[in-house]
Structure formats: C-alpha cells, structure tokens
Length: 290
Image 1 (cartoon, rainbow, N blue to C red):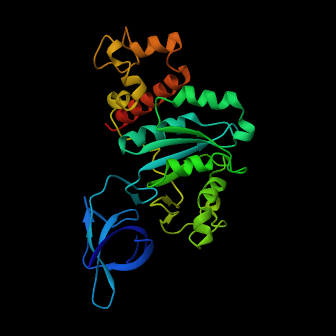
Image 2 (image 1 turned 120 degrees about the horizontal axis):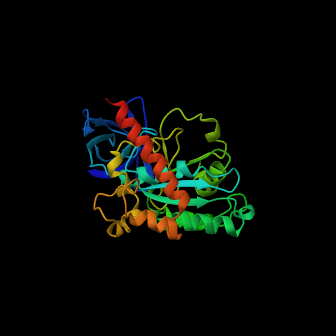
Image 3 (image 1 turned 90 degrees about the horizontal axis):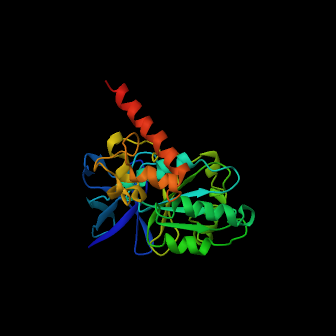
C-alpha cells in the first residue's frame, strides 16, 4: 500500500509525514533528492508500508520551490504582518514581495492592530500594494477581528509568516493555531519570539493548511540582474508600453511611463523611490562581483 503525504518534521533521519488526518514516522529506503537537495520539511512524498505496518519514504515528489532560511519546500503563501506601530519597514515589504514573485509564492499582507491603526493607515497600504499582492487583510489578533478571513485565505496552503518584531506575529499565529493547540499540535508558549525552534517544522491547523514554525527568513536575499528588477513589479509592467524603450529600467531613461505615472500621482512615489534603492543595491552588487 502506498499513500501520499507532506513532511512536517525531520529529525535524526526520521521523517514525520502528515496524511489522512494523522502523522506517520518513517525512514527513507534510500537517499532521495530533488535538484540535488535531500528531503526537506514541506516536501510531498510517497510512503509505502510493509506487512507489519512500518512506513518508509518511497519517493520524493517534484517541488514548486524551496527556501533556505527557513529550510522548507513547497511554500504557497508568505504572510507579511505589518502595523502602524512600530512604523512599517516598507523596504522589507518590497524585498519580500520581489522574492515571492521569483519563488512563485503568493504574498498576503496582514495589517494587524486594526483597533489602533486607523482607517487612513489601511487605505495607505491598499494604495501602495493593492496591485502588487494577492490580498490585503485588516485584522486584530488581540481582539480576534479578521482572523477568520486570514484563515480562509491560507486554507489548503503551506504558509510562512514574516514581518518586523512587535507587530503581533506571535499573537496572530496563536489565533490561527487555536484548533491545533486543542489537540496538542502547537503550544501557545512555543517561544517563537525567542527563536527557540531547533528544527524546521510545519504545524497542521486543519483543512490541509500548514504553517511553518521556524526562525530566520531568506526572502530578503535578492539575486537577480538589476536590468530584470522591473519585471517583478506587476504594477510597473502594466505601464511598460508607455515607455519609449522596451527595455526601460525606469531609472535614467527619457520618456518613461513609470516616472510619468509617479509625477501624475498614479504610481506611488514612495514605492518608486524604494524601487530605485533596491535597483542601486543590485547595481552595486554587480560591480563588486568583478
């Protein structure tokens, strides 16, 4: 008998695979890898069982993507949490957005602390990112407002959560994982804020929905040519046909549709200025390679 499942934990050569509403411990029959990488948390695998019911990882199924920090495969959604306090680091948001496009990961903006943010703050976020992300959700983890909408948004997916300190990520994750807590799947005192996780792991919160629980994040490391940066801004691509040059980088070229949109207020000036900062970072990195 063979079944398909997802690796939710890997420790000491043992893999813990979620399937059919349960978790099975298994070892690999042989060394398995995909694109020269061995089995990772998040991998979809095929299990086989011997006549005694002992499970083995028989095969490793193809990956959609993988991250190195945290070490996890097949991420569907990145949820970046922001709030009015502390003041948002929009460069961080933009870099994560870029890497989500590169890794084929949908980005959701969870605007936490809706009880103190104010309407103007949420409207500003919508103006900046409505054309750049999959969904923007206003919520309050402390008051349990809007968390059902976020749970529905990530339903059936594997998600990683990121954002600045003190924006309420831990409270939000604990809200989402309440059902898992009731079954012992996730402790409200897991110590995420103290970065105590020693092994990459995924928590199953039901409905084929998984949340990655591990410190560190690799979605800030951008490794693309500066000339291609524009291609990862969907709102800029929509304006490309207004540029004089097909390969316009929207920096120094004349008759640029993006720069014209910035001047007319159609395109966010702040978002454009952050684009220039990231572009210059990439240009500088290219110079230092030689």
